[in-house]
Structure formats: C-alpha cells, structure tokens
Image (cartoon, rainbow, N blue to C red; front, side, top):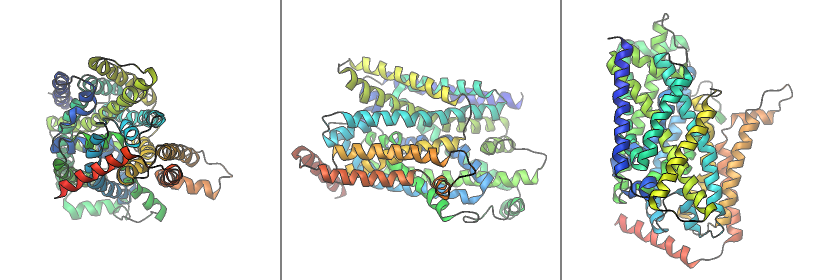
Length: 507
C-alpha cells in the first residue's frame, strides 16, 4: 500500500468514530437543554478535555507552531499569557459560574445567564449579546474551516476548497444531530489524540535531529535569536501577546463547559486535568516548531511550503504512514473540536437568545432541537462562504474573534459573578463598547500603510485590540452601573445564595 492509502485508512477510521459518537449522543438528546448543555451532566475529565480541545483547536497544532517556526521563541509569550488566563478562568470563574447559572433560573447560555442574573426585562441584553456571539463566531468558525482546507491541501495535495467542504460536512453532521453531548464526547476523544500527537512529534523529532545540543545548534544556524524569548520583541509586543490571557473570561464556547459540569466538587478535578493537558500540549507545540526548524536546516532538500503546516510535514517525515495518518487525524480533530463547539454556541444564541424573543411563541422540545439543528447548518454555510477565499492566516482570524469575545464578555462575566452592583444598563453599555472598540481598533491597525501614516496609527497596529477593548468595556460597565444601580431584592437573594453555596463547598 502507498503512504497515502495508509493515511486515508487512518482518517476514515477517525471520521467514522466521530460520526458514531454523534449518533450515540443523538439517541440521548431529548430537549433543548440536552442539546445545548448536555443536561449539566459532564464529568471532570470530559469537561476539562472538551474545554481544552474546543479552546486550542487548529491554532495549537497549526497556528502556534507556524508562528514559532517563523519568529522563534519570542512567539511563546502568547502561550504564556494563555496559560495564566486559563488557570485564572478555571480557578475563579468556573466554580462560581457553575453555581450562579443554576441559581438564576437554570440558565443554559451565556446571554440567558446575563439576562436572568441582572433581571433585564427589556431583553436588549440578551439580544445584543446573541448578535455579538453570531458576529465573532462567524469569523471563528471561518478560521477553523480555513484550517480544514489547509489540512487536506498540505497532507494530501487536495484542492483547498474540496478539503474545506469535506471537513465542514463531517463536523456539521455530528454537531447537527448530537448537540452538546456529541461535541463534548468528540472533544474528549480529540483532546486525547491532540495530546498524544503533540508529545510524540517533538520527542521522536529530537532524536532524528541529533539530540538537544545538535538541535539547538541547527536552530542557531538559521538565526541566533531563534531561542531567545526577548530578542526582537518590544515591550508593547510582549504585553500584547500576554494579553491573550484576558480573552478566556469571555469565550462562550469555553465557559459554557463550566456551566455543564456535573457537580461543584468536580470543578477542581477538571481544573487539574485541564491545566495539565494545556501546559504539556503547549510545550509539545513549541517543541514541534523548534524540531521543525532544526530538521529543515539539516535537510536542505526538504522544503516546507507553508510554516503553519510544520506539524503536518514533520509527522509524515517521522512516522510510519499509518501512524502518521492518526497524527494527521489529531490535527483534523483539533480543527473539528473548535468548529463544533462554536457552531453549537452560535446555534444556541440564534435559537435560545434571538428566535424565542423575536417570535415570542413556544415550541415543543423536539421543535426547538430541530430549530437548533437548522441554525447549525445555516451558520456553517455562511462561515464556509467566508473561508472560501483564504485571505488571512488561521492565527489572524482567531486573534480577531478571541479579542472580540474577550472585550465584549470578559469584564461583564467577571463583574456579574463578583460584583453586586452590576446593572443591565451597565453590562449592555460595556458589552457594546468592548465589541466596537475591537472592531475599530482592528480596522485602524490593519489599514494599508500610507505615506502619511502617523505614529498613532503605527502604535494602534502594534497593540492587540483586546487590551483597549477590555479596559474600556470594564470602565464603561463600572461607571454606568454605578449611575444606574438600584437595590433589587431578588438579585441580592441570588447573589447571597451563590455565595453561600460556594462557601459551603469550601468547608
């Protein structure tokens, strides 16, 4: 058999397994709560790896190794910021959100939680947050579909558009039918595959490139500064990279996992599993890029067409074609895990947070599930259309969507969990300001260079848009809330009940 045949066999086994999991979850899905939140029945391992896999996606195996391959270890500051942000998210947000979302009318989406938490009778908070989710997730899902097309193109020489269609059809299929359980179970399997692949490639690669000393020497021959964390980096650049960690507090597809964990006691176990998985996976992604630099320096006849495909190319160089096929499947798993999570959250925003409000009529449990599935299909088609022309890098698309969610929702989520005086008007104002700041900052910072470009526009372009977006959103939310705050007995009672349950768990 040819190498390609082995790889295709491995991919078929993987894709069939994902579809089987989707069918299994379909049999266990009865109503919209099951479809969107899995009946709040996730165990710690599934919750942790599901959150990690849906978080990291193709960025971990394609975007980050590609950035380090080109720029060296200075690009690791993003990973450092993400690790800090993820830990703080698990430690502070996860337990309180799990309790508070249940106390506030058993909320099953982030927009519904905010509406119920702040007793917003106007429904504006829920509508605006649903619209923001749809806007930024369109770009996020699009980044995953770009990664899907690149995967099949780099691995099999397939046409980019055909690869995009194949990857999209499979992930839409299991998300469409199985809902949250399918997404969580497949993410768990995909998380294990990603972890094993990220450990295997650099460990085997270090032997092929001659051990640590020889590998480091080869990297320095390419560029002496490649192994430096600070060479070529500005203070603003490092701050912007670390600021990626701020985004965790506002990512709907990640924090919704916290709402679905079975019990509060299991949040701590999930945190340990999730952080261990994340740290080792990030080390593996970094090691893959460094081994790739050394390998292609030592083998000038071998060429790497696209730096974001360094993980794909190294897996094919290092392993038997069948093993390489399963490593490739891990990359596809990373891509699919995030697309599925984002499609599901977008679907929940469209049905739970916009459709129900706009049409103001109740449907049967099965009727809502059907509408949710239709929403998944519609959003997927729009995202695929945007991804059809590969006009941006995976990392670039992810960065924009990550900043949008982090600035729009991050301050609101934190204040809603820890500050009694947050008001619906304050949350609405801060949410809008955060989203608009990211959009405008990105437009100005990425505008074509002109002869008359000012130092101000150059500065804007060097600062990650999540920083001004997060700060302005926080300040506006805080100021407007103070101006509009009025005591509300129901809000006070729910806040106190959440605090009581948290303290009770600590005893």
